[in-house]
Length: 457
Ligand SMILES: [Zn+2]
Image (cartoon, rainbow, N blue to C red; front, side, top):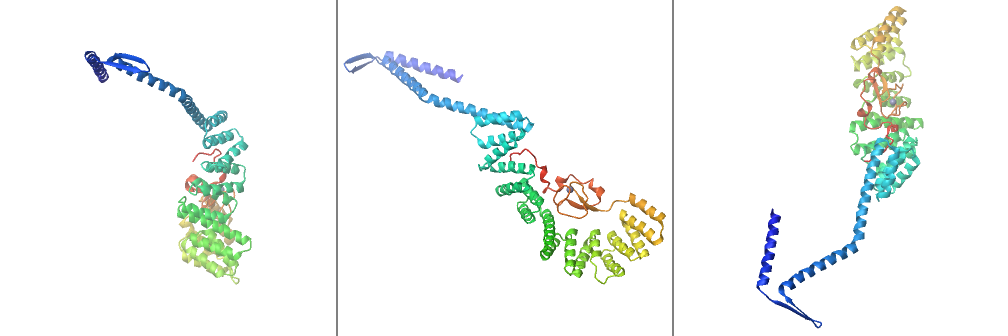
């Protein structure tokens, strides 16, 4: 509507100008190089307009001829780039869906079409892995190391390969390099710690835990538990190398850090006893017992025997433990156990029955069965207790909350599955009801679980 109106106005103005020109006659005369041109003003104006039009058209033609090839090239490059990115896209989709053939074809096409090595290298490496060509994948990953923008992804690829090839030393090298690049990447810190634990490089593992805490990848109670476990292992190693003093001070540090973690207390107490500090060793256990009685502490306590002690004196010692925790079944059973050693049958029976009233367990019933046989030679009564033992809840033991293994002694690394700090003191049947492990322990899964195909971060 407005266009039509404008058009109409332009036509009207032109008509008016034409009418005005024809009504106001005038002449234009040009004398030039011996030629003379005479014409009316109207014709001269029309000629001028035509001339401007011709010159404009000529200029357009000229610039098209000069600029054309360049514009064409730009257009071609754009098409190429579009195709390259489409190939890249299809390639990654093919990797995700496991289509090795398409992945490889698209990787080649993207490489040809795009001048974007960071992107095409990753696709090429993944396609090579999907085709089972680990050597080619390694070559691409190594090429990625040479560019800062792809170095981390390259390291991740090489690290995963080294773990799969079961080369933990090599893998740790890549992991440490990756951690220097991204100290806050949970995956890297976790892998680093796993490898250090697997290689029993405890001092390095300890600094990784400190770094994880600093980067807020673990909370401080978790970091404290990890550090305690590492300190106990360091103490064990120092002891194995004959460095008893160092072993003792590491164990002491573990006890102080964890408060009452039983393996740490046991370790320090045993080392104290071995270095001639039996009284201090016993005092340590008594102090821990007053906070949390534990069957293994009772065993350690029993073994720290003064030279002159007879069974009666030992009963006296265990009465001290009972006084510290008078109602605890562990106190009652520990004392009863010693009373049976000293053949104080009535005392043993009283304490076992009291413990049973607090909470029946297989151990209590087995001790009662033993008591019947040893005190009265009553195998019938013993059989009754053993029947009860079968129905009673099992006693707690160390259970790996990752694989369910039940090792005899605590260690920082599960011997069955290699998990770090995964042992808990629980009744074995309860292990079946544990939640899925990863949620409970965000760090330190076994390294073999890492995905084969790397993912862009
Ligand atoms: Zn395990």
